[in-house]
Amino acid sequence: MDAHVDRWPWRRAAQALAAAGAASRVPAPAGQAFEYRGCTFVCMADDLGCDLFAPRVLYQADADPANGIAIALDVVPCTSAAQALQVAEREAARWVDRHQILPPMRH
Image (cartoon, rainbow, N blue to C red; front, side):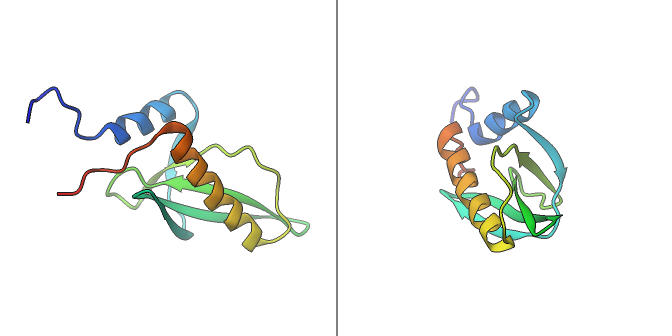
């Protein structure tokens, strides 16, 4: 394999998004695992009080589960935790499709 071939374009794309302010690195809290097109996410529903929940998504860009890339979501709060998790999963899938993020190649 040629040295100039990028074997991990998904990582570079995720890092570029983070550098551009579209995402930021944060520690991964407990949440619900979600996988889409080989990309792994942690989806959460943050309790905002007053029976409102905010969907939140972390993209697990590398093998270290302690760190994830927080995906900026432009969604309204939900009225239940289950609904917020569904929205988080849908937004994670849309993020992969929109940015054409590719998972790491497994040998």
